[in-house]
Image (cartoon, rainbow, N blue to C red; front, side):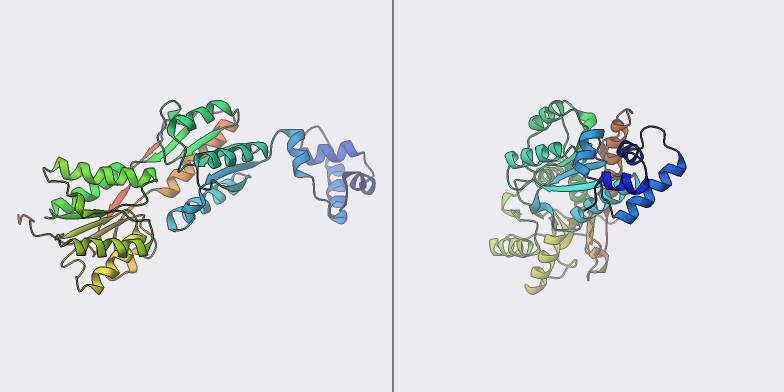
Length: 340
């Protein structure tokens, strides 16, 4: 592997001149720059990134911490893909680190990115509490942004979606279509998103004067298999329901299959709504109704915020995003629909 000294000798300049060309600091004539770049290409030289980071205090990298159990599914694929594209368009690279299975391991992942001298850190937490994240923002001098959680102390350092409100609206839409017995399949209950979506469902029923029937609430684990298993549990309870809200589309797909196996037609007998609006949702038979989170907009905003902080700019007050309910063929009127 070639060294900077070898590049300097080949270009006929000093090592300090090569360093100035690579860092962009200090005046170097265009002719000399051309000589150095030609020598770099001929020598196959690659700068030592760690050394460069130490020298310049900049890595041109942004770290993202996501728990590995969240990697699967369209939502997180879109989040990571959009983050990489947005950063690339701004001349920076994304470093993805696994937050693993606990708050302590999420903190270790954040510290790892800090030790790598990432210019900024984005956290998509699953286990860290709001208070712990507020403390982390106080601890690190580099910009830190939190996705999908509302902070108390550092509200301008977070971007979040109103999962509770979107679940409330989806449940209310079913009520307005004439449904009263509405079942709900939760996500994994160690997830703040799952907790908020369940809370929105409960609040919508209460706001409409309907009882919250605990037997119509079944725990899921985000997967199609858990959606199918939840429907089996619901059907074995003997309680009737004319609508089903699932905490993501993956579980809705499993639920719809299990309903079909049981001879229950969607939506004629049970209307179904999921969350995340995965690409296959419109192509299912029937097409799946779903709540679409503005993932791309959220990622774009959080990266704009990070870059603004790096450039000495101000943080935006725009941190709350609203989802959109997309009704398709999987929802029809319930037995209590009032005909106008």
